[in-house]
Length: 282
Image (cartoon, rainbow, N blue to C red; front, side, top):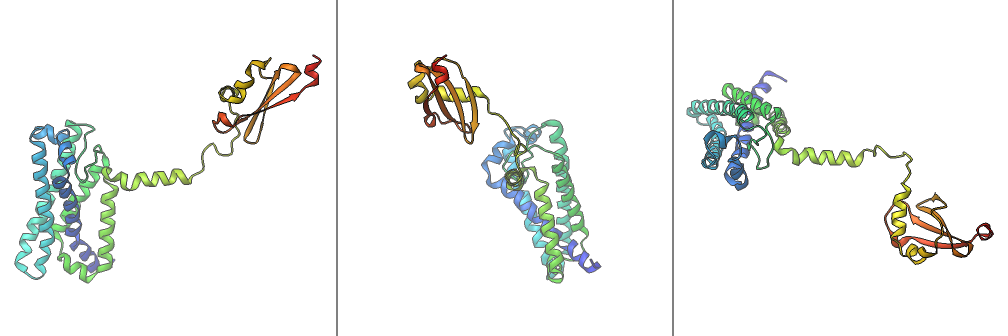
């Protein structure tokens, strides 16, 4: 990547920062669930449970304001007098990112296992990914502080590398947000579980005879002839989806039951009475 392209990517840093701060601020301002949960987070320990929702909303206002000012800083392309304020906003963004890092460290100490509540109303504990996300945010803010060009110029001069960098940065922020796992990680895990072969596929196994007998004894076929049976199970074998179970019955006959082997369906049990001359002469 050429030097002008690198400068353009650096110049677009405020756009990525504005997107992250806008999403984070929107959650804090519009989600009642997130504000209610803030009392149980480290923020409740820091400022008090009663004041936590108010402070949480105030942070949201500050984040949305920073996002708007970061984008407004691009107007320095047409109004050079805004160059200094743009640097000030980038500096304030860096301070805010450093503050996030400090808050995360405090959360791990004061309220282990509590949710950050940073970018989603969903509850997710603070992990190493939360720290890397805040560190990356701080690094991008420092880049914005020294960027040589404003973001409109950067996008206009090198649109492809700038858009690619913004997409990569946005993806990194999502991947580093435990609160967003339900949007991408869980669906991927479900897809993997559906696509991979079952670890027991292809292995032979024997269904316990006791399970078959419980199903057999619950069937109408068995109950209708149960008083005529004169032995325990004589023999049994599997035939496709059925398990064949045999008993001695009155009159020198053999009761042959066909029981579903791979499902529980007592109504499907079938009975046949077979003449057994060996039994008759026994």
